[in-house]
Length: 201
Image (cartoon, rainbow, N blue to C red):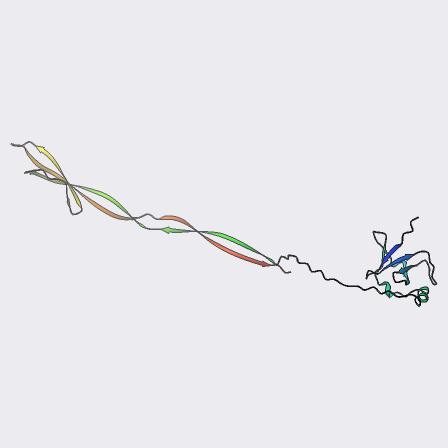
């Protein structure tokens, strides 16, 4: 049969041993006798003992606050009282706490713009100018009259004697006109929105 002592601790960590052999005065089955480390004996209601996983008991109050039994009072005159000294230690730990979040949203906007720029376009206007004149001497060559290019066209004709006659001239003028050709061009721009949310600790 296992005779190992049953340990009892109170809320301050004070230890004692559950005594199941002694029967002090005034003891009944509803009370348990606890022998403290300093030699004192106290009676504790059994319904206040809380069984622990390791087989020991715990009481949710201080053993020192209980009245000692008569046997303890008589023995205390010859017993030295031992007072436990308790020291508290401070443990400081650091942990990370999320205080807020920042969300950045980028939005792309599109817009259409009308591009209307003048464009140069060249056209050639050809005008036939009748001449019907005999050419004396060397035939005329291509020439410019202002901005008009003159190209002579020659033709041989039968006469009493053969001569070169200027039949007609082509007067070529270069003309410039300004035309518009609107085009739709899509341009993009970026916009950044910053939204901050702070989380309460």
